[in-house]
Amino acid sequence: MIALEDVEDMSALTRKEIDALAEHEHFTTFDAALMGDYLMHVHHGPQKVHEMICDDIRAALNQDNVEHARELFAVLRGFLAEHPEAARGAT
Image 1 (spheres, rainbow, N blue to C red):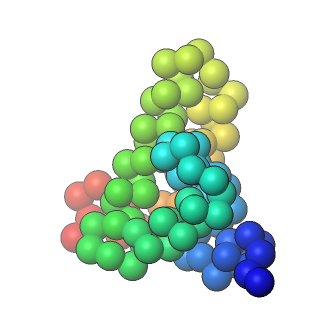
Image 2: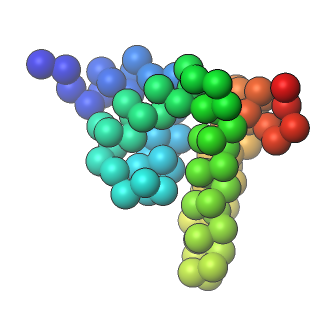
């Protein structure tokens, strides 16, 4: 049987990026890992992941949860460093 750690290790995303997607979509970590890996392999999928993390940052700020917004911003910076094609305006 495949464990959650196996799915996370096979994913194109880090565990923190997967957690951000799980938060955004209200999915389990397992489902978010599968969805995130799928998105990283489809046209404009990385941009969608970027958008979802940005949405999470906005939601945290709207809830006055600055610490969580900082954590998500660090996740976003790492994501964009690893996947520059996900940046807005990237071709």
